[in-house]
Amino acid sequence: MAYVNTKEILDKANKEFYAVPAFNINNLEFFHAIVEGAVEERAPLIIETSEGAIKYAGNGDPFRGAKFFVDLVKGYAESVDIPISLHLDHGKNFSFIVAAIKAGYTSVMIDASEFPFEENVERTAEIVKIAHAAGVSVEAELGRLKGVEDNVSVDERDAVLVNPDEAGRFVELTGVDFLAPAIGTSHGAFKFKGEAKLDFERLKKVKELTGLPLVLHGASSVPEDLVELANQHGAKIEGAKGVPPEMLKEAVRYGINKVNTDTDLRIAFVAGLRKSLADDPAQFDPRKYLKLGKEYVKKVVKERLRFLGAAGKA
Ligand code: G3H
Ligand code: 13P
Ligand code: ZN
Image (tube, rainbow, N blue to C red; front, side):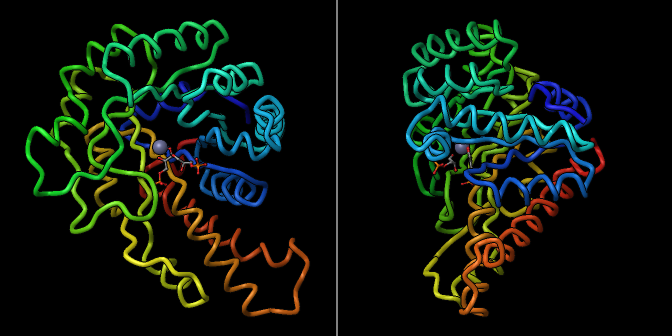
């Protein structure tokens, strides 16, 4: 259908109360698996790349890497029947953000969440000015992505999680298009020691005060069956725990519209790759031994598109 602005995809999701997963990619196999899954589910799609992914694809050069991803995603989007956008995930360095905007990404994240509020505002507002002038939409983050244990004090929770009262002011001062509030998730495969818990009260307030499409980072569910399969074939992933799908659905009810997903794809792929190499040790054609990993990634993609409500929305 088309290579579109992420804002177009997320404004629709916000209006119609569903979420679109944003899938991180670093290479061709994941990209193909994700697009195939989204086309089969007739879902809008957000592809995102980290600064690390851009560096990897450009063999060290951000401009080359950003251009590589734009050529890949834009070229492909023109030949399939769903809207696809390309987003820079966790832009922290000016050079990567500018590289993404110049190359043709349709949205960027400025992640200045590690700085005090005023500095986060200042850095975000500067990127919004540059990006909007180029027709590119912007995501920013408030609070820090860090698991919060049950037994921590109120002060400690306040120090880490989003302060909803700041959210409305932040949006007004920066003109940002989407906001990622920290509500207790963290990146990677080890999100919670005990039971999974998110601060939905904060999320509800942020939605009420901003009305913007909201983003959940660190949203992988870390499927137990895939971790087990990987471990059966030589992986050592112990004590992994993600955000259960039911909890993600609840987050969508309270206003999450973009669900960042990287770890689940990595686990699916490594499970398939390990199984494939173990089952057919004579195989040395990468197009063949990478195939099962790709199939598992596609399965995860399709499941997420369905339970987040994005399936059928293209
Ligand atoms: O938020 C982080 C994403 O999972 C990307 O991670 O920096 O390893 O590419 P990365
Ligand atoms: P996961 O590590 O939970 O997949 O989170 C990915 C993410 O937030 C990318 O920005
Ligand atoms: Zn993230």
